[in-house]
Length: 534
Ligand code: FAD
Ligand code: NA7
Image (cartoon, rainbow, N blue to C red; front, side, top):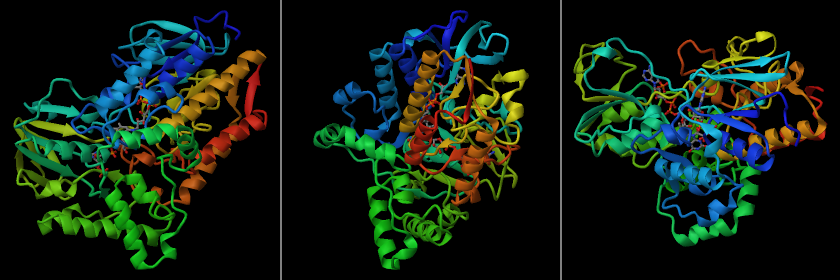
């Protein structure tokens, strides 16, 4: 491979999650490039470094929440349960970093604060919060799409004498056992932390703004035989995952709920309810839950009947009944609704009676009611997808800033590139696939590293998407999203969770198989949607 003579490095990689680590491996270990990588965490892991809250768990099954390229890691893998806990995932990522010697390319505890494309040299100038600036031909960002924490401000928060923390920046030394704890937020994270804290807190108050649809996760123990079966069928499993839509390791149903009898619907819903898994309930039951209102209602009503059956106090059950459609990222957790049958758990509807302010000893609601607390946990999610991009002074040609270009919603070509930002490659950038993410990350990193390899071989100086190709991609993503019910629900998937953020399409919702075909088509058509300079 040709080296970039005048640059400090061939490539700068930002992020040490699944994305950044694999990019360093591909570019440095396989292509022999000079790579400098950064993460503001003190070690590898990304999501799984930061999200150490009690109950943190992947809801992708253990056999496919890992790298498919890492056969060596799979050979020795021995997971305990159907889903991986946060410590297990972090341990796996540390093991990958060790085996592929990735840490030596990283400078940790270092935030990339600015990255400017210098048109005169054709290089990226990358500046850190430690005051360093380096140059590189390529900038590869794996900043994480659920990584910039969203912590809504409340009046009086500084007065509160107890602990306040966000699940996505969990402190090492906090012990909540025997404490009076409130959890704000009932998304994927809230559900996990609520289930874990209920048995250990003296009292748990759940501050719920929107009631959610939560199906069981089915986290049983996985025996050695089953794991060996996964190992033996490794290649076939990954082929299936990568050609499927949601890439969660099961075949999506091809049968519309509208095509079967009510009894059959009930039977299938019950079967998958007992099997567990949020994506399974939405996509393995029937093919049209996320696209047809009648089918969506059928699934939603099934879950509502379960809530009514499980929750003993009718008033609490009523508060837990979702009022909107079933079209957010599907949630799951074991015995979630049962938590509300415990004497030490209170459900507080903060839509009906919002938080007025924090006080010295807790929270006061608008009704005047006071909740005495030792700790408040924010499970309020993330400024998803473009959040970390807007937090960097990131500039392309002519000094154009990404946050200005994306002020009406993020754009992006293939979820990887951006017009006017040459030699800039995002991992899980806007308008990329909505799936189990590790196989999508691998897909993107492989496409990026192959493209970089091609450029180095052909002696090309810059690559960037043609504006009309990017526009067409964004339009495609919009039309596909509009074929689903997802835009009808308010969630982070469209940026609706952040006050003031414009609602925009941020995902390619046709699935990983179709996405991989799109990436291959770009190569087959000789990169005609991209602009190069020599
Ligand atoms: P991340 O793991 O988010 O890593 C990004 C890294 O970049 C971070 O370490 C961050 O500190 C660093 N960074 C960002 N900006 C800068 C900067 N300016 N300078 C330096 N460093 C920077 N996905 C699934 O598919 N299945 C699941 O079950 C699942 N469960 C999840 C549970 C939780 C609680 C959360 C939060 C996410 C979950 N996800 C899940 C999504 C998960 O984020 C992805 O699967 C995957 O881990 C993303 O990897 P990544 O490398 O792209 O980003
Ligand atoms: P989510 O799914 O965005 O959930 C955040 C929760 O916090 C949700 O229940 C919100 O209520 C609630 N929230 C957010 N802001 C507020 C304010 N200001 N007041 C009250 N309640 C609030 O984040 P998660 O971390 O659970 O999950 C994100 C993804 O990470 C997840 O999908 C997985 O992929 C992993 P709302 O529903 O908006 O009314």
